[in-house]
Length: 77
Image (cartoon, rainbow, N blue to C red; front, side, top):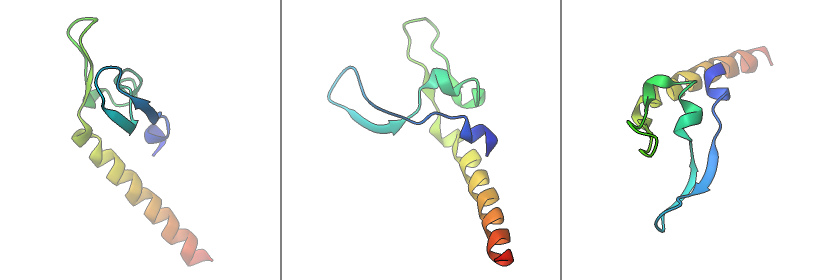
């Protein structure tokens, strides 16, 4: 959960085209936290990419940890 809390969720529009992205990540900000899911561009001009499917296990683990904490809180209430 700690690593996920360091991830900045951004709201943005694409510079080129008519695509609107409500929420997402900036690969350069995500790379120091989860380097294994980011592919750097080979040149300065090349776009970095995020493999969102590789982020899924981290999200699921965080949900499981939060659910465990919630169960403990509910049992102590």
